[in-house]
Image (tube, rainbow, N blue to C red; front, top):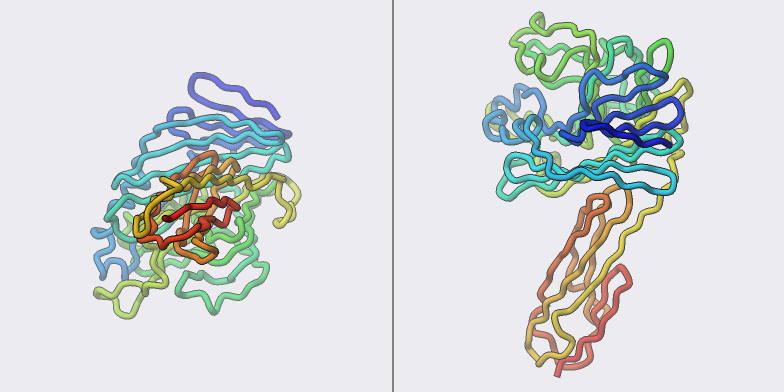
Length: 381
């Protein structure tokens, strides 16, 4: 692998593939394969969808507008290059409207595999999220679509049971449904992998472990702006959405009902990760470049000697040295009994500190431990 840079960009190169990452935005701006540019614009985080009729009825465009702003406005706070034995990672931190944070990492391997990883940490008191994913555009010559997942028709979180798990093939223009009023369209759920192909080679994307995706011969802005089907232009590019999930469509009624709670993306930390590779041969979706999950934990009680009935503060620091985000449960035990369970999502190369208070400890020698193997004895007198 080769890494070089100028004042504006980082360039990562392996085999026939080169990545171009902006130092000013932290975004992947181009993938060059065999000397040919594949991206028509940067790969961007996306939290928005063109409102459906049900969305309009429950005032989603007004209620959730902060997430449309979050898709368009990002402030880069930090970008760094991290080298591993068989890989190079470019990790960046972005502040979003609503005091949310996005941790975006591109990890490129000598095998020419790219792993795109992001962790979204929403701010406080924000509404539900319409969509969580990445979006990019490629030249219009990539017209053939193949995927393994639900299909062949569009499927959504709360509209997918009729979709059959199979290997499906379509053209890009067949992947959308033209509703009378233009709106969100063409999603496919529970997909292991998909590829876009032209006459020369393919862009292959696989979920880690699954993803939702859609491809359109127009842009999200085109879809949202049009009032009638004939107003949607036909572009010479293809818009590609690679999503963790988008909220359900709802439809108990079309004049105010929200999607059911089990199909709602509430504001909490989320982790989205997928693999991308360009080539003439289809790689095996379940064969991944080698890397280890490396999460380390340190637990520290505020004191080890205290009086009966006192409270004890416990601090746990988790460090993720992996090139991908990790989502785990932290469990604190007192005398081998669970007393705290906390879901944590830690971005790559980041630490997270959690603090807990254990109330009114009883007299005796008490064993404090966690599910990462830390063990401490606390003496209550």
